[in-house]
Length: 472
Image (cartoon, rainbow, N blue to C red):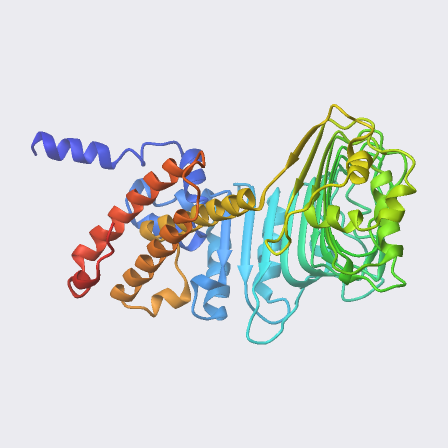
């Protein structure tokens, strides 16, 4: 064996020389099926998978559910039973609550799982995964995320979850009839509800909650959270913030067309928000409604302590058109303002000139506050940069083989190369829209050229595609 072979063997075995906990962390980014396959590498790797604290299950790795269920049974029975489970990520598609779901959750809870992510994938037929609440009784669980058409309480009188150490709860497309769902989660700090239907009307009454996000909901929600600091509301009707005296950050997005004449209208806030630092309000309305406009002025009045205020241009235009209401405002409510930023959401609205009345209303109470009016061009540049970055990240993953979809398996190698080439063209199109003066333009171009070289290299290896290589 020459020196080159010795060096190659040493270099190739660096990963095996790492401690188990670091190898586990590296393997946590792939599914448990592929982790098990590493046991064939060498004797060092033979039993690594048996003590993996990160278990990522997905039915997408198997052609049929029975094979996945059999794999789950064999894996859990062969795993080192003395090793605790830190996190479980379960992604599945199936009717009702398959037995393997309960088997995985039972095993996770019995091994002190701290983080649990459950995703119920949509299928050809509308299915709901039903999980009995008894499964959600854990002393160890700290982070729980549930996504998909999932129910946990088929019976309205079912008990609530018992998760005394849970700190973070994220629910998306979730359906539950338990109005007191969070009552036995005393340490909950972060709660996110997206596209959820908990009850027609329910309370979020929690003494320790510090961050709350509500998106795309219709249920009437009353919030009593004395320790709440961060609140995000996006297109959720019927929010009544009864008590949040420590609130420091508010992001609120709404649209007037979501409401009928008899609806409450914009967010209802308490009057004791004395610790507000940052507020970002985006309300789009093309309908002239005096009652709704009055409610907007009432909302702004309740934000009198804010220091950093951001409003969308469409909202400012909307309230600017109500000169009678502005003239009846005695003084500006914003007495602590340090910064006011106004930005456009759409490119359909034309530029607006702030009248002296609206300027006095917004800045009269804080004449030294910094004022920024963001142009349409600046917003467009930000969107183009974001789009280019997202496309480059996706292309990078495709080039590294990190993205595998059912559709990609049906394509030939040449067709997959053609898709990568199309992405190159899309990225280049987005970058041409970014102004030359943008601070990140050169960095984005440099990264783009690097990806372009990789794609051209792949095309040069593909003989049928040589006549259609991308140009620089």
